[in-house]
Length: 304
Image (cartoon, rainbow, N blue to C red; front, side, top):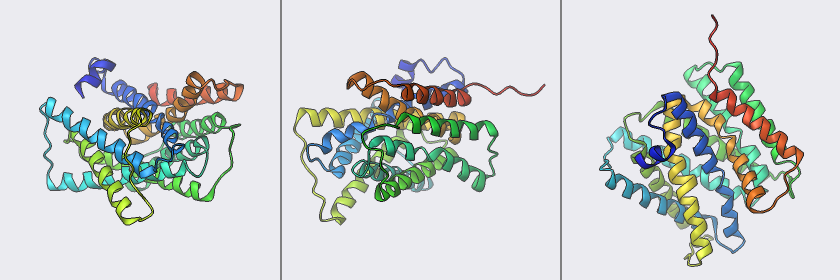
């Protein structure tokens, strides 16, 4: 945790700015999730990919806790809440990756961005949190930006099964963010993230045992190990840690809105690394997404 903060120079920032930076970096790290499709082309199953991803992440978290002389201890209440968070995050990841087999990642990314709206609704209904016009406008602008960003791909067709999977992913992720915001303030993000990753490993193992059609595979090819390593470090280790910090510093709804940078990152990776064309719709989508992020990051002026 210290190394991440030192690298991003977060120690010198105030809490609001620190939370915004953590949310932005976390979202950008989550944005590389679609590279998992590279393994699908080689016949690697979703459960195998996720099992390797979360197992490696759990090991990294455990080493970090030992090196930083942190604690693995949780109270009974903290353990139960952490178990719930792990199940939610595991369900969100699994349904999202299965949706990648049903529809284009661009369409899935657009539908997934329902989760900030779900977060806002849950916070308003369950905790009577006031949702201001600026927050709602940021959600709408970001959603339009993501939709434009992913318009014109090779496959923009909607798939019922894929759509249901993405909605479940968005809902479970929204609940995860809300619970993270409302509890476990005394548990370090490092310890919390370790147990969340460990729960995800257990989820994948149980799912593979329940479903006889699933066979876990041994990964030996350098390409496979590289992809799994990238998924374990960026959208898991770094993203989970910084997400926990961001939610605690700026709240669940603003952190969720910053998630608009996830599909933006995926698109930019395609442009920069895979020579995908940079079109006018892409430019418009990027501007809208950045505008929604600024609505969250920039402080609101109080009336005189």
